[in-house]
Length: 78
Image (cartoon, rainbow, N blue to C red; front, side, top):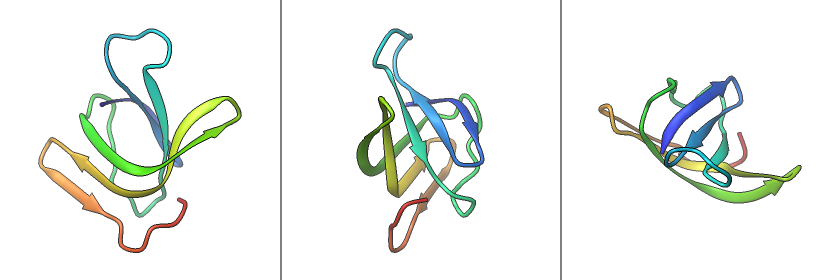
């Protein structure tokens, strides 16, 4: 998935060329990797629905294809 936008608490990851149901919000914390718009990533975490939005939280792994991999030890919500 491609990073479409981000802030201090998470990022929108988008798949495909737009349209409905093609993005997900990923909550993360300050100890997580710095993501930039355009990065291609894979993420593992807990699926949830919050205020009519699909999200991932309790992230256990974020893989950045541009040469990095980050793994949280322990889990928990960011």
